[in-house]
Length: 473
Image (tube, rainbow, N blue to C red):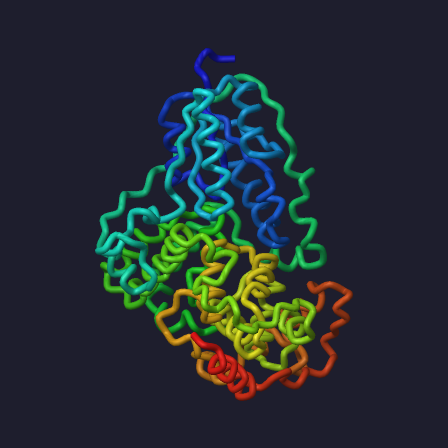
């Protein structure tokens, strides 16, 4: 082994070489770098789709690291135990990692940093997952923002650093250290029949993400205002799965989107606002971490939502059999692709929590199992925003009509045709693929009759408004 102690780079949700401050700092030291990914309780606790997507993303990133001379080690166990073992085995005296912001990660990382420093280890966390560290954005009175528009106004003109270049080569570690094998972890096991279908829609790795960003900012971003709400076409950047795993950084997206705005792109500012909407979710999670588990507005704690996940209406919602084409098409898109159009997410969330009067946690947990772009902050804020219990400047009694919404954003009915086989004599391949992806015990077939609405939009709206009126907000 070399006399120069290596640096441990703890891989987190930062699966990229470029604009990776933690990796850049390790590479810039001139010392050997050993990358370690830790399969701890948080990894094991992921839902089926995000766990699979993490596995394939990690596999790709490991190849990238190896190509520039970084030794990659996989270990299972509590993070502190694994890192302590690695430090002892390798002689390393430094650990770098990219910050996470969800409550579980904050608790874990705080303990890890404290314990390592007590052992005389240099432990340092870096930014990179966000544009702005949550504690750096404050109101004029010094507290956190609770409404998005003032938050946007506070950050939109901030100077941001330039993107950090990818390291070209890193001094190799000449020792040996034991590693587990990714194939043995079988992170996609819970996907079962759905895996080959969802895999077709995954855009894996840093290069694929950057290609998509470049293509989007070269043209589609100009029409982002008009096309981002059309569920039948890719009018958005499609980068949510890559941002979730750090295969691209928000800073890279911001600079390219900002350049498009400077050249006069009509949709670029809206794209930048969506990036900051993601930031706002993390801002809220940092300052009010209970948003991931509890009602953000405590006065909703006694609201009489259904909490029974086995309720027939909830089952119909999960299976895309509510009889409401917009809801059902979106839920089937989710199961086949592991993603869902943003307008669809708003509609299915509103329908579950308002028309079906079911708790937002049911939807949050279902998305956490099915989304390959699952993100703890965005998922929690999105569900609470839709249900009325979260940070929304609009009245809580706003109830989206899923029928008129589909007529507005898809007047030709292309989205329903794309995903609902029962409505057409010659179903599309995507609509039929749903029945190959779902569990066999759902006992659904494409030649079944399409169900009547389990509750109509007018009935659901009236029931929700009655419940709101009876509640003393």
